Image 1 (spheres, rainbow, N blue to C red):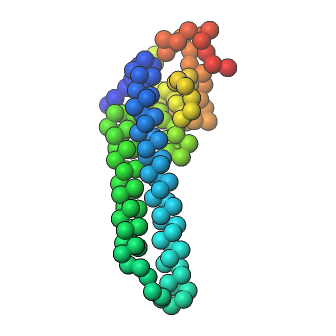
Image 2 (image 1 turned 30 degrees about the vertical axis):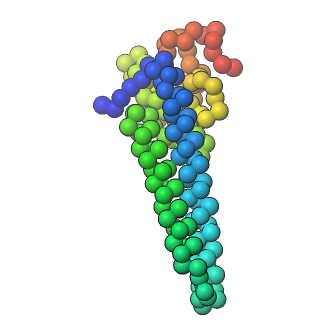
Image 3 (image 1 turned 60 degrees about the horizontal axis):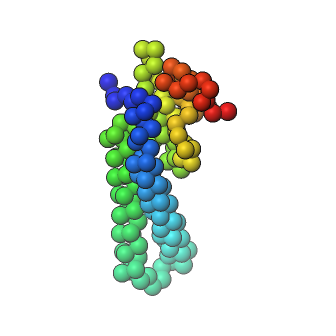
Length: 145
């Protein structure tokens, strides 16, 4: 069985997870930008039937791309090792397995939210997220609107 979290445990992990998520997003964006640049270069070479390429610069950019990609993978692996699921890197969507009433559900947090305020069943996903209630140790009166 995979790791499960209480609401308090998941909440306490947010600062670390947010930093890892932001690092993964930044390095993923960097890798994608360099990939576009290298694709454009490949297309120019193809269309022109070849031309003088600064091999050292291109090799350096390829190395930067690979390093950024590895940094993204490493950040995502760290999140996974904690036991948290990355559902959408671009949106910064994380799910925390949690047992409620003997059933595994997912606490749901999105980058930019100050705390975990939602949950959904494993089947429903993000579209089916609902506000937390007393079953999670959160009184109804504190429920977000």
